[in-house]
Length: 103
Image (cartoon, rainbow, N blue to C red):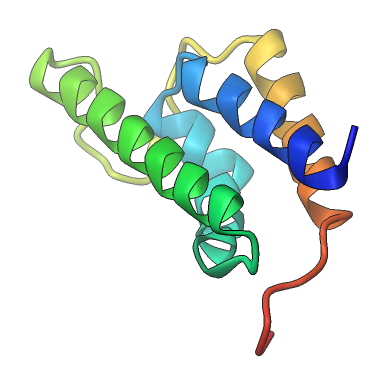
């Protein structure tokens, strides 16, 4: 499997995971993911955009349902070891991909 195919697989897994504002903030994954919006691979760039949009929609739905703490910096309950492990694995995998041009 190519590096791009592996990255696409991880991005698809990330998109399907339940996320919370707390998980996204505590891991810093959104900041790292934003770098891939300009990845030389159009597939990775497009999938990254899709994942970030999906996460935003999920967090907004949680907020609308009253599940997000009022303090933006609050760490949210509900994070699971499985989610944290997946986020860590994706962060590890994405660090192995070629850097964005201009970085």
